[in-house]
Length: 259
Image 1 (tube, rainbow, N blue to C red):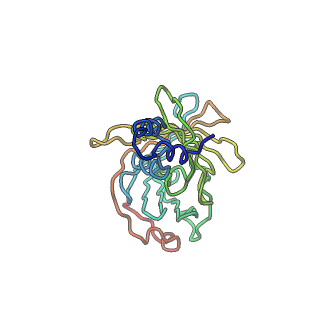
Image 2 (image 1 turned 90 degrees about the vertical axis):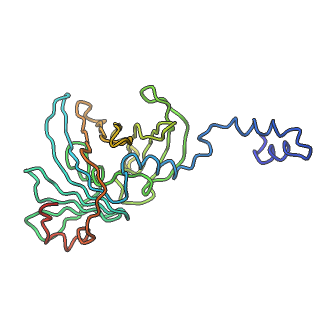
Image 3 (image 1 turned 60 degrees about the horizontal axis):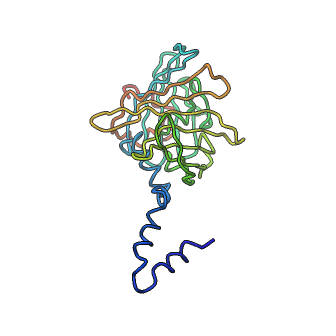
C-alpha cells in the first residue's frame, strides 16, 4: 500500500498534468479526517458553557417509570482553571456545598468546620454525580480521536472516542457524538475505570438569546432502565464569583447567603 506522501510526490511531478488528479485525490478524504479533536471539543463545549466564568441555575430531576420522583436545585459557579462551586438550594440540603478544584472535590456541611473529601462520582441525585453538575466541558479533561461517523436519531454525527487526560474526572472514557455540521453534542456513552459503560447521556439544545445552547442533559441508567435523571440548566449567565469562594478553609466559615 502506498503512503500518502509517496502518492502526493508522484502526482506532483513537474509538468502539472496530474494536478487535477491530485486535487481530486485529496478532496476524496472525509471532511472530518483533518478535524482536530481539541478544536472539536472546544466547539462542543461552547454549546454548554458560553463564557469562561458563569453562574448556572440547575435543577436535577429523578424520574421512575416516567413519573417525577424527586428533584434538587443547585446554583453552580464555574471559573477558569477547573474550579466549580455547587451551592445546594433545596430545603433538604440547604447550606451544603460541593467544591471542585482541579482534580479534587470537597463536600462542605453547614454543621461542621471540616471539609469532607469526595470524588467526582459521588452521587447527588439519581444518576447525577458531583462531576456531572460541577463540570460542563470536555476539552480540559479528554483527548482522543475521531473514530468515524454514526447516525443518532436520524442525525449524521461524528463519533469521538475520548480518554481522560487527568485522574479526577467522573468518567475515564467517553464516546461522544457531535452533530456533523454544527458540532453540537447529541449523545455520550460514559464509561468508568472498569471499562464498563455506566450510563448514556442525551443533550437537548434550544435557542436562547439567539444562540443554540444545551439546556438539558438526560442520563439513562444501564442497570435500572426504568429510571432516568434529567439535569436542566434553567439559566446560564456570565458571572465572576470571588476567588475566596474557592478556598476550602475560607468556605467553611462563609454561608454564602444571597449567592
